[in-house]
Image 1 (cartoon, rainbow over the protein chains, first blue to last red):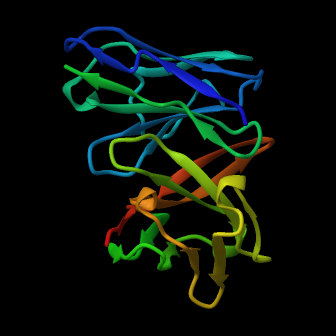
Image 2 (tube, rainbow over the protein chains, first blue to last red):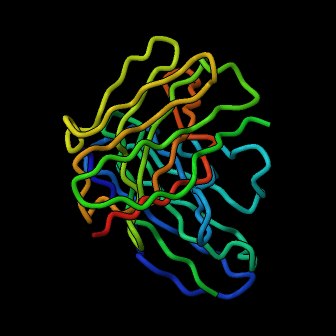
Length: 106
Length: 121
């Protein structure tokens, strides 16, 4: 199984801050990497697919980058509605695996 | 819009089975794979397996082999996930998710709303 490791596990930031979350794969996965946002009591929602493609309807302040084993999710200017837990997920092979999540607080 | 609607919460005793349904709406049911995932309270996301609705073929995570069965009913556009021999560690929210494929890339979108399964004596 491909292990996915996110850092940090939690993050406190202020409105307007630039926020970066890192995801590292235990095996090279080229760009088979997706990011999801999960708000309390809700299902995860797709933000970024194929490492850097923004899902339709997702605000442009979200961006993704990386390839191989190291990836980042960046929020350029944090908004109050961005409070959530963020997960990376590899789709390189099954079993599909997720990072442990990064809980973002203001 | 495309959506997956899951069945309601369940409470089961240890050793029992649970069957969760996931109804596909607003797209061609047989055109996309459906995955099942779960999330224990306060924990991360765990992939359980996949079903191909057109053929009914399945692939399960090794952890659940022998205990999980995924099926589908093409007449109603519903997929089912049955988990047997339940134990307290199976208490979780269970999600179905539609796979989107573009070229060699894939991702989950959308997800069902989730079904809480509580295993307690």
